[in-house]
Length: 97
Image (cartoon, rainbow, N blue to C red; front, side, top):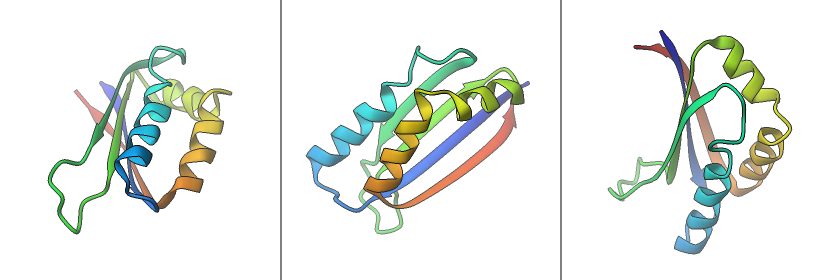
């Protein structure tokens, strides 16, 4: 069993420059936090009015890894910056195979 952590954000400024800056910010976590097995950041290409602009999918071996990630000193400022840039953020954590 793994734990998947999914974050979607709708940005206040939806310019391609700001979306790319946000993508790079989230992607900076990859390979830098113990317990983080995989991290993928994607940008919406569909353009639906219902779509969020960016998604992060992180994978952990267990809830302990997810907890360590949430509290990690590299993760906390990224979350704070994302909250400044975003109009809306949603998170789902679930068990996966």
